[in-house]
Image 1 (tube, rainbow, N blue to C red):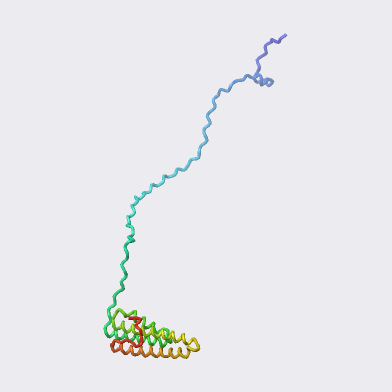
Image 2 (tube, rainbow, N blue to C red; image 1 turned 90 degrees about the vertical axis):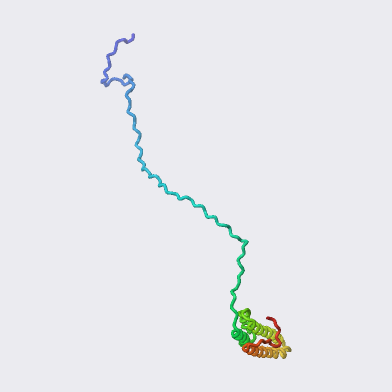
Length: 200
């Protein structure tokens, strides 16, 4: 026989009441929205300064170099001509310096003095040019004679001829230079004897 006896209302405060017997009630209360987390404040960057950009200037147009044009030829300055007294002096010195250099150097450097005077004064007067050329011709002739004498002196048989040739050439050159110095100092035109005209 079924139990149809109604049960007394359960007391919610009854500790003996079973939780399963509690009625299920949906929670319809609205939850407040969760506010978003605050973001750290960013420091505002100042705007970049607007520098004034100068306008670009166009480059100047430079004409290309004219390679076809040649520079003017170098013209050495013209030196004034010597007066007659200066020509006689330098004509005499061409013989004196040439002869003295030959004696002091043993016949090896006599041409240096004559050559220097000839190159310096050959265009400044015909008289000094003639005597300086004569002095240089004497030195060239003496150099040839010295060369022949030394070549003959190397051999035993040629030494008998070579040494006299060296002495004769040396004496001849000194005498000719002395005569040429006197002629030049006196203003006389003169051609040395036994001397080819290598330089004119």
